[in-house]
Image 1 (cartoon, rainbow, N blue to C red):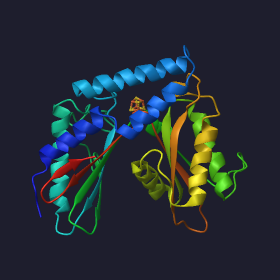
Image 2: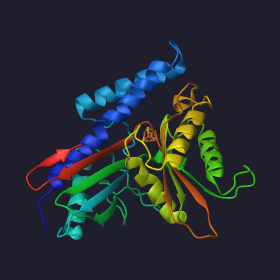
Image 3: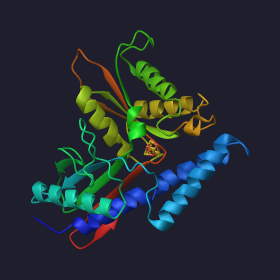
Image 4: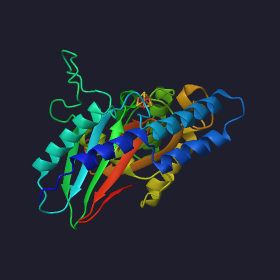
Length: 291
Ligand code: SF4
């Protein structure tokens, strides 16, 4: 099946780049409210709130770095992934021409910017998965470069951190990554953590888990408890927004697991900055819904 989706996809990109999702905006407001009057942290949150407001009103990007566009396409049987990829690519180029995205695709050796966010394979990144049902569901994340730079992968056991191959070891290395970031990658952020997999699949899954809503509950009670503990303890580090000190360094933590080889135990952390841009579009037979 083919349906012309380029213009709805441009609108999805405009929304993700210019309008922060309500759960993230609320988490930032709550973090703002608990900082001391007159503190640097409170000032940072006030500036973020003003920035978010201006971006929404003017349809301008929330941050100058509009990141790597990452699409997750869940399609019912019968859709052509070749056509969908073509339309997504066209929409990314058009959204760049309309300044919803900054031209961000740079040749790795020559440094030449492609000018339209289209690069070699995987820029934009598109993941496809066939699902049952009638709805086509397209999620997008814009993953900023600064927060991507502070992502990390650990191979357990890690003797330096005294981190073994268990959930306690996972807790130690995730907190180590937050400590090392020291607010770089534009705290307060959200942690996407994958336990297991290999080096490649760990990074993919640690980004995908960031599609979950802030404040939701992990269906695995052990992981849910670990998510809450890591968030609480990260916020006791005092790093604060942008590293200026304060009560909120991390807004939330999301953890998933992948089967692994007996010989390996990787913990992979994808850090998402406060400009946590993710949106969903659902294409139903008669209607398009933006969530
Ligand atoms: S890390 Fe996020 S908020 Fe910071 S510059 Fe990059 S995209 Fe913007």
